[in-house]
Image (cartoon, rainbow, N blue to C red; front, side):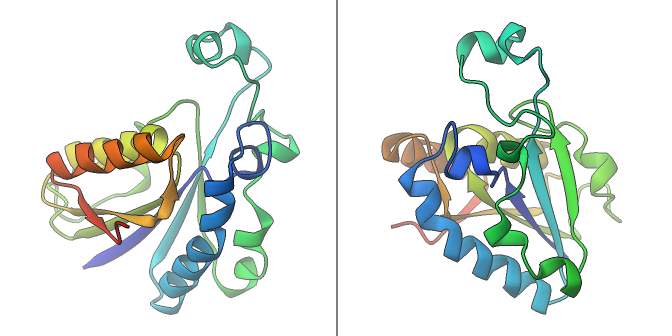
Length: 182
């Protein structure tokens, strides 16, 4: 069984920057511990990075969320150093830059031995539960219907607590396992 941890958009702009929140800051220690646990098991860790260009405000997303964030090359675009410091020396990890909520290139990043994904165990953590975490969990479940796709609720933060809870319920309805709900 191939184990993969996907750390969704734990970037400075979503934790302490333009779209940061106390909930995102609160989950940092748990996210770090989860990454370390996967490294100890010699399992894969993939970080996603929300990535926007200078034309962000002219994009569909920019028109609906007119807050410039995660602009490629800026400090806000970088993954929180609290999650990566010391890890590079221990084990490499993959970074996926995604231009929108859900990444449609997972088949290129995660090449499953079995087409249905029955050889995969994928866990997602990060922000925002109700946008990027849910989008990617559902895309992965669609690409790999027999994979175990799991979300650790204690290592996720939503735009609001209500949106976080609603997203967890939606994912459960689509056969994504949800663990550590409060």
